Amino acid sequence: MTGQDKYEKIVELARRRGFFWPAYEIYGGVSGFYELGPLGTLLKKNIENKWREWFIRRHQEYVVEIETPVITPSRVLEASGHVEHFTDPIVECLKCGRVFRADHLVEEKLKLKVEGMSIEEIEKIIKEHDLRCPVCGGPLGNVRLFNLLFQTTIGPYKGNIGYLRPEAAQGMFVAFKRVYEAMRARLPIGIAQIGRVARNEISPRQGMIRLREFTIMEVEFFFDPEEPECPLLDKVADTKLRILTAEAKKRGEDKPEEYTVEEAVREKIIINPWLAYWMAVARDFVHELGVPYDNMFFEDKLPHERAHYSSQTFDQLVKVSRWGWVEVSGHSYRGDYDLSRHMKYSGQDLRVFKSYPQPIKTKVKKLLVNKGLLGKDFKAESKRIIEKLNSMSISEVEKQLKEKGYVMVNGYRIDEKYVKVVEVEEKISGKHFIPHVVEPSFGAERLLYITLEYAYREKDDRVILSLPRDLAPIQVAVFPLLAKKELVVKAKEIYNMLVNHGFYVVYDESGSIGRRYARADEIGVPAAITVDYQTLEDDTVTLRDRDTWKQIRVPVQALVETLQKFIYRNLDLEQLGNIKPVTKPS
Image (cartoon, rainbow, N blue to C red; front, side, top):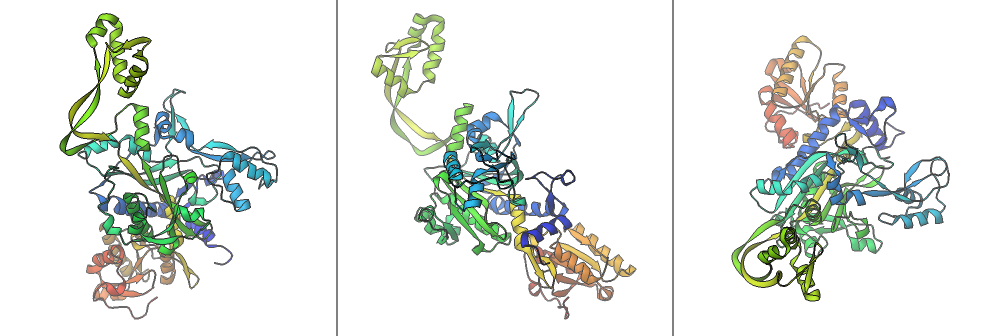
């Protein structure tokens, strides 16, 4: 087990035992695409289900889950700003033609952080330091922007452009009004989605960390900006978040400081209570994947580092062996950016109505149009004039009347005998507004790798994958001590019983019992059941703990309940009740 770093060992184990490997291997593979094997698929589903548990089921009073299409019409992503802004800087070698991500190239060669710099600034740095192609040493060309959207066409028409969605968020924004009405028009409300997304990364080189196609897990949480208080904040007020603040970064500091959630909100380090709440949930969720609290922190992104839609963004970073700190989730305050843009581009009203406790009297300005006189003087043209007037803002009509004495409509001068702006008193029962949004967003495959890295350990020249028990793709291994008929029959009977009770189980009778334990440890099976000759006498079996290698004897009739406590409640062997320990662990 020497000669390889931890990352290489995990990748080798993942290929050999069926967690993941590069896609299209028999054709040489394609960078940025990975396939999940049988164990990887089960592990990823368990991570997704744990995310559902933390972000949806525990918050079902507020959060619902939907599913929207992967193919997105161009108009949607024009509205969201992705067609214009979803870009990265690239530079091409003028000798060999290879293309590199320009900001990453500068950061790797010069150890300078240039995230968010303009292409002109990055190009100046490349020229000043005479940076050259890392492959052939050739000169580099001009820096330009590359759009990361995968483009396609919808149907047979070339002009009907669509894109593979780069995030699940836009499907939730477009569906907001439908979900809001279906959930009885209540705020706050969270819309969650787990689904595939695609980003045409320029040069992905970090295995499962940076993919061109992956599964995203997101919540768009909608609330009234005039009532941003979070009723759940008290539950996490004392939770400690390690935060590298924007102010600390400006001072050149790179070490996070610890704040309670209450302190972070009070001191405006986190500008919105709901944003702070979901960051606290994310902290504990990632910890449940096996990451120590000391190996994660939240980085406050500076304005030039944030996405175009964000008023504040924190990246949740986790330390890994090869690349140092990597992002595992993003937490953004998106304000009303998305709903406002979709209102503008679609022409649909995505506002919600808020009733006042008591109607209030207020003075409002109204447009009075003399339709009869317009009809008499403008005949057939009057209908189009009236439609245009009604589509204009009252402030614009009032401004033109004051400045010019008339309003220009469809080429006609419409003066005050046809249209007036008057102030009247009305009773108002409520108002329309656009909800604001905070968003926690996770990449499932990246979390899968993080989970494997923190589970991987070696003991006595053996690999043990100490996965959290409820995440393990295979939960129980069943072994007959020897491949003798009477032991095999009983072991298969127990295997079938456990399968019928919903466990994922592996049966193995090949090789020595020690070899079989080692194989189970290597793929992270938390519990191993061994059927021996004592089983035939008293109907008890040994239950072995993957991590401690300790064993206890358990009556077969109590096995299902015992395993449920061991796997799902994470009880140690000593906590499982009055069950006799095995004196010689193996």
